[in-house]
Amino acid sequence: MNVYPILDRLEKVRQVKPDAWVACCPAHEDRSPSLAIADKGDRVLMHCYGGCTFDEIRAALGMQSHEFFADGKAPKSAAPGVSLRALNTALVRELVLCWVLAADRSKGRQIAPADLARERIARQRIVKAWEVQP
Image (cartoon, rainbow, N blue to C red; front, side, top):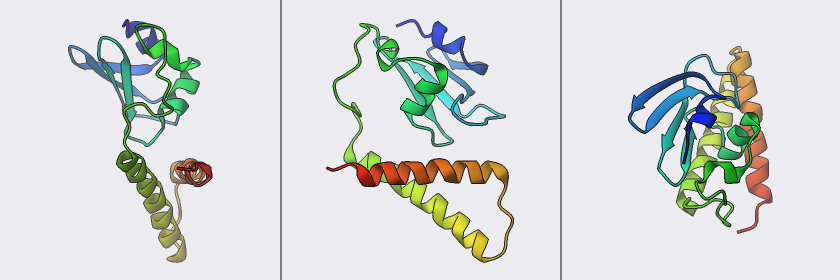
């Protein structure tokens, strides 16, 4: 897999290991790198520590899922290699974020614009997860 066409689309790219990089996430406003990229030979993996999903990152890059795989074929599974436990953990993270902001609002605290934008993303993900039937 050639990771460089993907890296060319990102900003503030920095190599941290021979097959790993960090960069600013294209799916949200990012001033410092929060996106981890790893070249696994047969596929490129990405993880946003700001909470963006693979599909959000992929769409922001203007790419299709199959472009992240050496054979040009995306796995048939909607979430390959992701356990139900990991999905639930991600959902809990979104719920906690919304709860913390609600608590701040109830105390009259001002919410930063970046936090409001992140809350909108969290709410969208919660609604999407609610619609998915196991």
